[in-house]
Image (tube, one colour):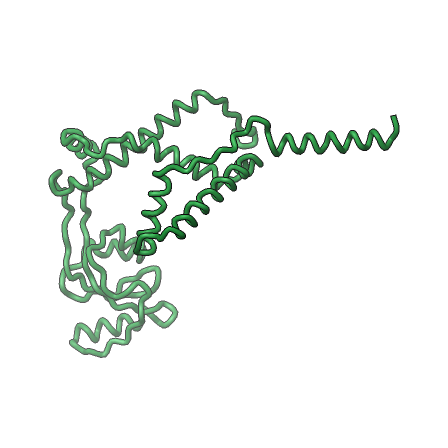
Length: 266
């Protein structure tokens, strides 16, 4: 057999294999566009544009849907979805959403009451403060200037040379945890002993020195079930959704053998 014939047969076989790969013999090439899909896209168009699409625009909507489906199938055929983490995540989210559709949106009141009792501490409203402050930057002799400003305030002098503060001057209904997050632990701890209605300080924070006036203080409060029923219902449904998805995934996981690289199992 001549080298040319062998080369010819090799090229022919390569073309055949490539064609077989790109065009599987039993691959479904039918694209069906349902009324529901078109109506859904028309409704989306209406919401975005503010009017019903005309006939040409409907034709364009359908053409775009067909092109999207063709490109989607070609991407799957080429395996472009197999290593794309974003696509995997979105498909996983989609099947999770489908699973959530079976979840009741009207839980029984008895179940909500039990959920509230079992997780009552999460509805506790902590002690909180409303206050205003004057800030003195540490890199501008903050401690000394704050002391001088305190003397001026205590002696009813109006000249206060304070610095602007990034988070603002007035704060409403802030818990000690909120205050600690914004100003630091030592600053928040000072609120446990500060009186209402008078300027106090200087008090140090992570930023510098402050003069503080507490305008209002609300003690820790446990709301009744009736007061937080809307939040309880939302939390209950979220909890049920998470449990349902977890159980669903656990059932599926039982059908798989999971092998993790030894490098990450130490």
